[in-house]
Image (cartoon, rainbow, N blue to C red; front, side, top):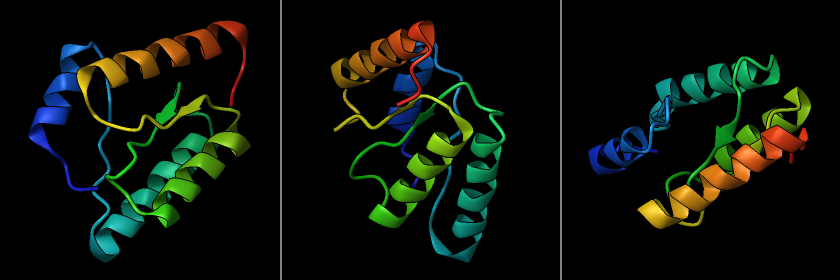
Length: 101
């Protein structure tokens, strides 16, 4: 979706190295395709999609790329700090246990 500075700052404040993919217009779709390809090639340690920030089509593409690339995937329901912390703990457990979905 559209990059929201407060959410990006929140992620950075939690120590998360992240890439926020702008999804508007045809350039956005190219960016989503490139990100999905990187995820499929497992050039990511995890993938996160924030509900309400992207449409179903983008959500499905990222989730499916994570499945194909055997990359942990999480989709927090909000971008609030508590929800992001829960999501990051879940990803940590998945990574530690070798669970990808």
